[in-house]
Image (cartoon, rainbow, N blue to C red):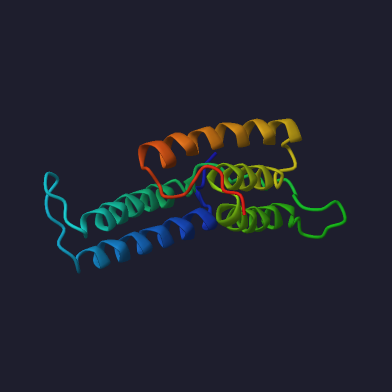
Length: 159
């Protein structure tokens, strides 16, 4: 029996798009001085990130070929056949909450809110899991952004 290779078009086109965006970032980075590893210029980071993005895109496009036909994905969405927009709405609401709470409440409430609200977008998450994830990410945000990078956003702000 001969095994035919199939191409997962979504992965193939997604990988190709990543390659194009990565090459565009490399091209954009060459407008600035790139420098060397020991003396990096302003164009080094976009060029390096573009290279990594292009490499990742190539790997994704190469993995789009499989030896067996891909099984159809289980139907997802609302039981009535309507598209499930819960995740999208929760992510957008989380971003809005971060903007408002970052301005009026500070880093900790804003970080907790964006992670908590966004985590509720996944139907598999429970309230307890969302709270634990939010607490962990808030602690990481304090260490990375407030302590290590000394971001000029206070932990708490009232008013």
